[in-house]
Image 1 (cartoon, helix red, strand yellow):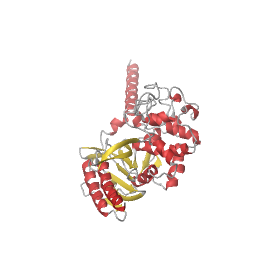
Image 2 (image 1 turned 90 degrees about the vertical axis):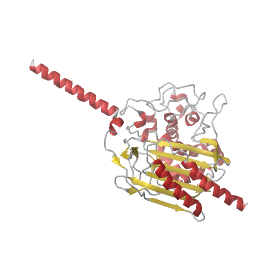
Image 3 (image 1 turned 120 degrees about the vertical axis):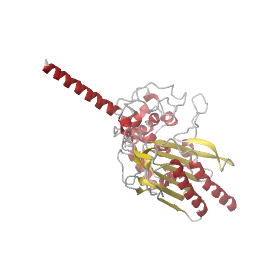
Image 4 (image 1 turned 45 degrees about the vertical axis):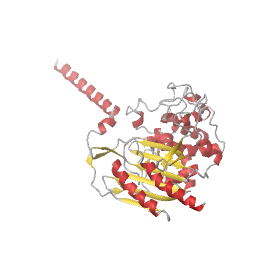
Length: 409
């Protein structure tokens, strides 16, 4: 009788431990934030900036913007850069790349850029489109032969313009239970599609609009199928190396020297974010870069060298729905394209742009083609947006560049 009781207790304990371990793995991101919070350091915060000759006044105002914006956002590190007609005219960084070691952020500190990765992927796709190496309107099954329906029937154009009907992030069967917090490593982007390729589409492809990072990831698998090389290698050899961008990369699941540590902040305290593996979203949200390299990359949408102007125009043409209606976000192929107010509402101008939220990092990337200006802003804090801070930075340089152009004319 006693032995039976002891066995029963042991079985119950094993079951409770097993259930507890399973719950912990399923909901690990929640438990991660239960302890370990550390107070933020007192100021002053270290900063560094540089500017090109002739931009003294705008640079001084941008330096002030940097200090003010970091304080307003409470960012551990904030970094930004501006280019005009292909030249970086100002760049600045403030705060700490790592709070624990008090390592200051530098102009070369790299951040996750979140969904600004979609614009980078657009440029990588443009290289192949310019070579007629793939067909945007062919079913993606042509490039991913083992892909299941219904995902196999969509086209690359629909995937890149969010008109394919693919859902956004959801629950999954892996640890943890949320796709967004994935810790699973994928060697190939085709494998990352397996979690949703058989899921029902939200609407017939082309007939609606639903912003979907998982759907956009199809573009990376198409690139791999068309080139026979990993997405990250195509990005590196066909885009980054030709432009001399040595700090930009597809996230390989490990932290590299010079990367910013990424944080959650609450009530004046900080904690590193739960460690995720971004290989399930390389095309849509898994690229790491610096503002200085992003503004150099963005100039490709003003004066392209990796592809022709016709290809550039194709990438930034908002995609209509099947019945001809415009899509609600004026979304092109990896870019939002709008006429936006600048200079305190004094003028409207065309902007190609993409915001990005990665886990523990925020990015804003904007190209003002009519002015030759590109702006990139990044910070190492888990937050939804910068508010109007990137536009205020852009205005400092748009105003002076327009004045200089008017004088030269």
